[in-house]
Image 1 (cartoon, rainbow, N blue to C red):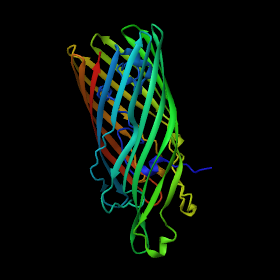
Image 2 (image 1 turned 180 degrees about the vertical axis):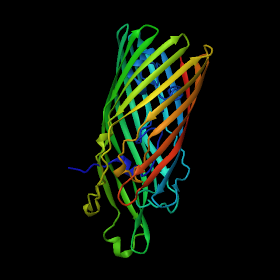
Image 3 (image 1 turned 90 degrees about the horizontal axis):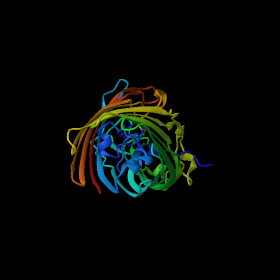
Image 4 (image 1 turned 90 degrees about the vertical axis):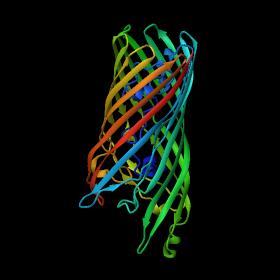
Length: 397
């Protein structure tokens, strides 16, 4: 049986907009409302937020955009100076298209990045033997179909076809020198999602629930060892790496209230099954002596999102929201290869329509509060901030 290969091991200190390494900013419209979208968002980006809601499109709806995630993460080792990261901007894209086949049936497809991050610790980082540079992206292709079961009840299902790519550099310590290991590779995985939307009170209250399954992924790649002293070269030849990955399952439940014709207030509670990461381990099939699994014991967590949208005119909307996203890592397993902290964020956004074309923009500021690590060998405190910029263009007919 293969050991668990967690992508977050290879992520090596990347930080994203959401806790762990989840990316949930797949629409600037929902980002402006702090991602509270499961019960109400009804354009083609609902493929991500709640598949049942794609029935809200008129006939054809296309959205495409990008999210710029700019993290600033710091680590202060116990008794030592603050350590930081080099500036790294991650730009995960999103593209969705939905066609309404009839009044009760719609189908579409989405392409987006539900998990990922990139980071580069400053030169001389105290934890460079755990984490130095990295890049991770999980690209998801999500064909989806939705059906109107009743005037007040919709259902939707989708297939998730995931492609993961990664690259990592990590320092290696020898007796009188330092070397480096460079790993890279990719893998495929498959899962599904299913959603429902119910109108509780017409034009006033709607409920939405969506489930996304875990995605198993077998990662295969190569390890390139560099600047290895002659005495160690026989033990550290370039070799293969492989293992099993399990991206977490999740459930989101939301409610949306429309107390005024142009005002929508929404709240989402999202459960993420991070307990699928009990340890971090990479298997070297040709050199099992260097396998080194590390316990992580992540906990499944709930995160919460509250947002509102107000239509100043038929064409112009403004949005705002707040979010709370606790970190899944316990203090005693928190290390630089998987840094994290509890997140509190605020958001704002604006949307404008030019006939069939619309533009949505959003900004989120996320504070990563002090997270104490008692991990053996490298105790300290992690904290920081993340700024998130979203832009989505839409077309409807």
